[in-house]
Image (cartoon, rainbow, N blue to C red):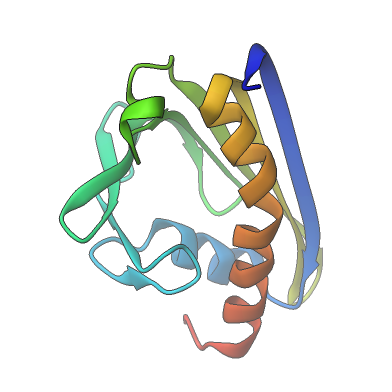
Length: 144
């Protein structure tokens, strides 16, 4: 049964990359994200602007950038659109935190909050796999 209450999902991992590289990878627009279902991020990624993440011509998520503190923090609304079951559910909030821990290392944290129903269930199930793929991709790719 879908989750009816609002959910908070937190994922955190150490990365062998400085915050600037993590930031570039997260905010790069019009580039295929192999680690996230070959999706493409569109939008200027500046506070107050709208963004969309889509694949195959369909929006997977849309929202508004709420706050940025490059290269350490990005907060945006997260409105799931990947199928009709989630399209009517309320938007949540997605926050990325990138904390330097050395010259070329950082801790990367993802917080999803305010999601309900099928969106919350999907995010709870998929978030660790998505960002584990992001970690593997980032540590093997030159994003500088």
